[in-house]
Image (tube, rainbow over all chains, first blue to last red; front, side, top):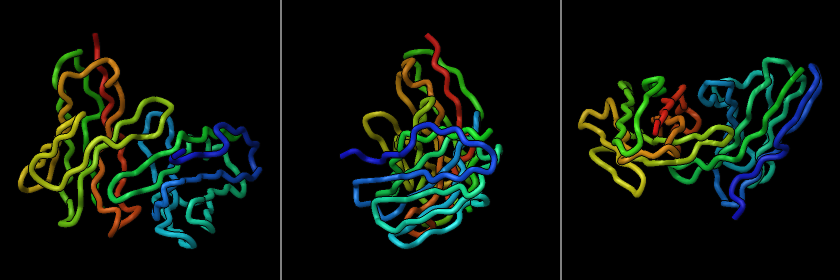
Length: 110
Length: 112
């Protein structure tokens, strides 16, 4: 099992550009999450999904959109990137009470 | 929404036992308490989870008093490799998915 994988690992954007982060899990988990982590801080929930075709807002959803067309994939989109979105993005999937995290995507917006 | 409070940082020495306490005064009846460990440039990793009393696994113990308003993660005989950030989460993934928060965690530094 690959567990939770994230693509890409690093990305640099200019203000106003758009991009999509891909999260994939091969554990057949229903719940998936997107977090962001700023330097020296904890993880903040952006969006989450409780199953294929469903999404919901988390703590900091503004400026992001998500889609869960397939159970194994959870996409995070930035329509018009801003410097405030410079962060490390983590995806996770859940089995019961345990969350399994991906390696993260380090995004810099100039 | 169950908020948690942890010390920002702790220092310890190799071989000592470390106890990190988390306060969660408004924990709900069906909430579980879960602890995660995060190393730099990695995603958090599950350590232990419990509902009440004491839970022990191969890496840690979790103590939860009867009122469940706090919990203590105990790491026996820490080593340098235990230097990490530790997060306490309160919630029930099946009933309130997405509503538990990580907070800023406790940065544990283990010294030789």
